[in-house]
Image (tube, rainbow, N blue to C red; front, top):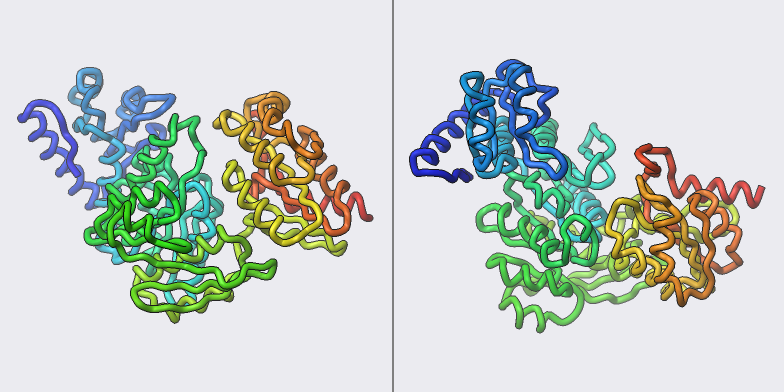
Length: 505
């Protein structure tokens, strides 16, 4: 993907120079985006940034021995005098895309024979990735995952620093997966990663869209921009002849279905609206046969075949995750008979995870940190006929402030007791964050508050009566809390266990 502007002669030179870099990358040239890590002979890519500019670090990269520099074309006049005769400067319209192409050449990804699955959407990415992983592994394939919880494949695991890592790291991880004989890699693809071209240089064999609800508007600004970022996975990164796997129950999913000629729809119930908006596309259609506290039984129909699956997962949103995973696996070559393995999938840490205890306390930890996911998690638990629902929640600092009262309202509407506390306050005052949540709690039946998350969880456990359920929402699998700029160990399951021990010992 050559993106060069300028005069015809400048564009021609740019293309020729970049082709030279691609050949050198294919022969082992190292590419860096951090000037501090540059070694003699390396290529330095001056990446665009939200708070700093990559071009400002070109002098440091040159001092460390960079032989090649990729810089944004609009900065040509600024960069040329700095580089002069010290290195070869290549001016690319989008250095982030250039990095992806160089990484693709360096790690020779197209030659690896590794199938790639991308999953994007506001909610459900992690659970869907785990279900796909389980189904593929049950069918005898070796699977790797790059996601919110970890980056892993058989014999290797590391905690995830970002839902989608940086571009060079993605390619390197995929390269290492293939060295370990992984057949399929599953990647959660965030809207930030798509907007920042972190998946540049990749071609996806299957791409799943789960849903779109309000989140990350502090970054994207509005829902249409947020949707546009998500849609890039389907517009720019699908392998030739592949179509997206798109939720036809979601209005944004139907828009994507209309955009993707080879798209596949999935969802619950009638497909009439989807066909009206998106045309006569293949549809994987689910029907819930039973949904209880013990799990779900779902009938699935696709291309003239019908089958049933049983799952211990609870909630209709998890049924949607099951349908998305089945559609992806069918596109990858599995059969409907392979879907029986869903029965042995027990779930994901931090996704309605039950806290084990000896006192028959029904306590669940869930990652729900958006209004929509919080509504879904609470609705799922309330459907299990507990006497009362107690919900502990907070809102992250330095993030979308508009969703704070919406989070409060989601809890006020569904919980019998709302317990307001801190999530990751970061550099904001926890009490100020709570002040912005509080208007949404105006109609709550009962509210308890404490900015200290451990104290709030203890208050919630103390509030429990026989037959109650407690939901601790917002952090799920995370084992830390960010206060100021410090990352402190904190795990909601551990905090609940500590509260139980304190109150019942």
